[in-house]
Amino acid sequence: MHDAYNRSAFFPNSVKRRRGKPRGFDFYVKWSIGNWAELVALRFCREVLSEKLGVTAFRYGYSSGRIPRSLEEFEAIEREREELEKFGKRPNLLIYDRTFAEGRWGELEGIVKKPDDEIASLVHEALAAAEVETSLWSVKRAKQLSFTVKEEDVQRLQNWRSRFGIPILVFQVFVDELHFAVLDAIVREGKLKRDRSTGKPTHFYPVTPDTRLADIEDVKVKAKLEFYENGKLVVFPVISGGKFVNINEGAIKRLSALLKRSKP
Image (tube, rainbow, N blue to C red; front, side, top):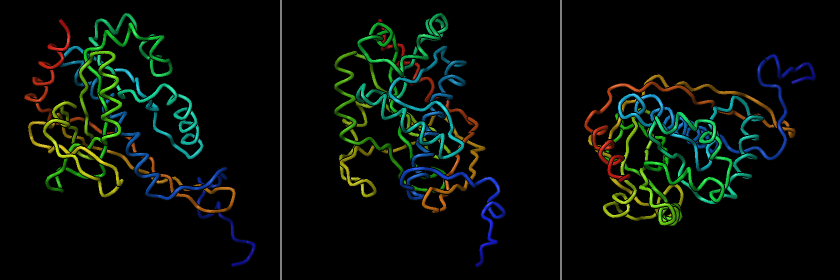
């Protein structure tokens, strides 16, 4: 090929040069779907549970709250994550009574960026906390899928619960379904074994029709092409969207009962 080769002609939206060391495509896929899953769980609380149970949720343990559309935005989120992880391991979401939250919305939107010592009174008002786990699998295409919670996270989440006395749920987000279970049940009834993909001890708890909260449709996936300073092409996936359909009213009722028991 001669010098007349023009990258922008082949990749018209992909001529930005990014700094730093490029990551592999698998890393970006897993990161993007994990980031999307956190938003799915938050949206489900604010859209579905708000209407059916009169509750809502706010980011607490670090999650970005947005879909990055480029590597530049991804890097900004990573810098923000590194800064806020100094607060230690916290559940991704806190679930509140909607009436309580409506009068304190601005304060509650800001708890993700504040240490617990400054927001302890607000944290104690939560009905429940939620940890968000993700999976690259389709429930409708695979068999015998599970909730997966790393043992290292379980220990830190239990320490947090000991401090605040708030029950912890787990939202497991698959590409086509959203499920929930109680962390205690996952630890008590699941199997602890080494995850072959991460190499880490992980609690596996079976997904069943009873744990399903909703189906997820219309997930959108795009690929952005960019270049690092060394000239290497990087494919960055943008995963967004997702519509909640076929709501499982039985699971909603079980979740409602748990939230009612959490406060006197």
